[in-house]
Image 1 (tube, one colour):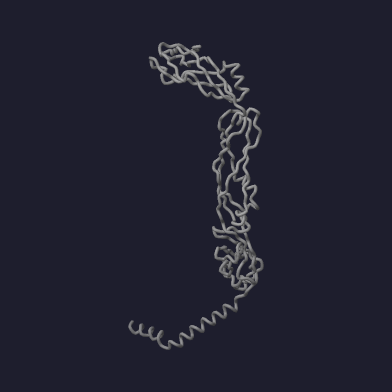
Image 2 (cartoon, helix red, strand yellow):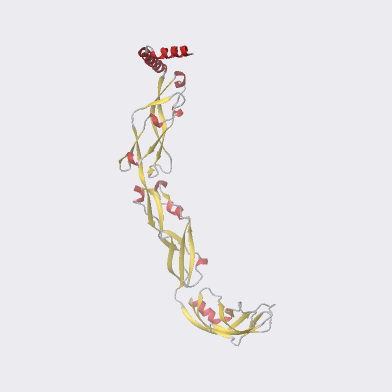
Length: 345
């Protein structure tokens, strides 16, 4: 066994220089034969997908951008014979450091940007070492939201203040577009059902403002950040409001018909001072019977004794509001039950 080991060591370490030279010659011969057996072919119009870093917008955004180049491929003759341009596809990424002049980028391209197809590999890109690409820096910018109302109010009403939220929205896009972008004024329609009330604020809504903004964006190259809605608060006022006194309006007490108690009060009427649209104030003054004034007895309906309760009211006209009610509170006595409405007038 010891003798066998010595023979093996002698084989490897004797004539070492000759063996190294022989190994080098074998490698050279193999490489020569391999290259001799390899063939090359030029492929015209191979597609290269162009992508961009997050900080950049390509000039074709939001559509994908492709370029075409000519390449040389190498491989065994049998494989090369069946290769076509569609078998290869490259990919490059535009980076900020590739900038040559503002908006213009030179993106390096080499065989490393292609995937090899089996034993066939890309060995050269013909005619260029870079691809010229137009791109812009990605920016986010705030723009003021402008809102205007449309629609005609009736002669009895006029428009008060108009407020909306948010007052600004953020838009994202290429730097060159954002620098010259002007957002449109968003319109909110005042429909008749929204303007029939006097001295009140009406909340309206502009749904999907991104769709309206998108109508003015050149070539769909802007990407508005999603804004669900813009809420608009519109104040409706009377055109020339007038006030009037409506005396001796009957006070009602709404009782539970199955209650164990009845509720009485010595105060039978109240006086209202109203303000509103002239025509509606006049109509209410001529026919006040539709005004309802009632005592708020919810908290004391089943508590025997004398209680001070506030007076509530309901008006039939939206164009009129109560400025003052006299008295504001009345004393009621909770005693035995009676059913239905008790009109104390």
